[in-house]
Image 1 (cartoon, rainbow, N blue to C red):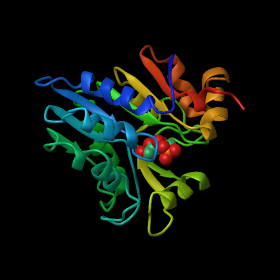
Image 2: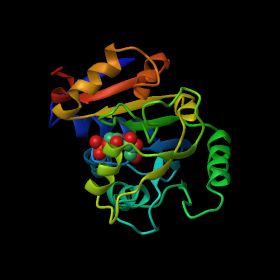
Image 3: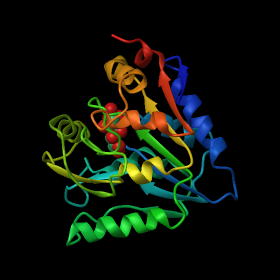
Image 4: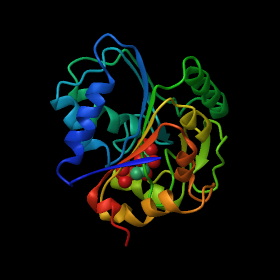
Length: 232
Ligand code: F6R
């Protein structure tokens, strides 16, 4: 897995420009997008740099089991941080209906939409516990899209994102579909991510640190800022 590092202030413009280049006009692309704090400045740079999603099928990576409209939900974050900044809507927007019953059927529906063409690119963030999406520690490389119990730190993330009540569960694209993406970008910023990024890059590959599985992917890249790459 390649590692590309940028200065703290250069990181977001670099990722934004890379995404603009990945989504050229007239080329149908299928991309899954993480939400959360990390990608926000990169998405803003994408939009400011003339990025558009007219030819892109957007897949939300994961979602908290929170009521529709809750500001901490991932679909709300994606709208705020990316979709509303772009000049026109994406070609298609795939999100989770977390009020569907049974939720397992909703997971299978989403998995079918993913498999009907796969992903050209998965844009991921890195959890402080090594998760990607909501694939928490213990997630094997072949896990499907599914309902998951959230680690306490992931529940705290939801509060940080503005959730009105802490969710205990979520739905995530599974490791299988993430690892099947043609290309993967793992976005990592900040010194608070340095220790876990070091584990991802140099520790054992396995379910204890789900992001470590990216090292077995032929076309995965870590795009980090300098503070995230200085092991502490
Ligand atoms: C959110 C997601 C999560 C976050 C991760 C890092 O859609 O997929 O895995 O990417 O928890 O969150 P931040 O970027 O807020 O540190």
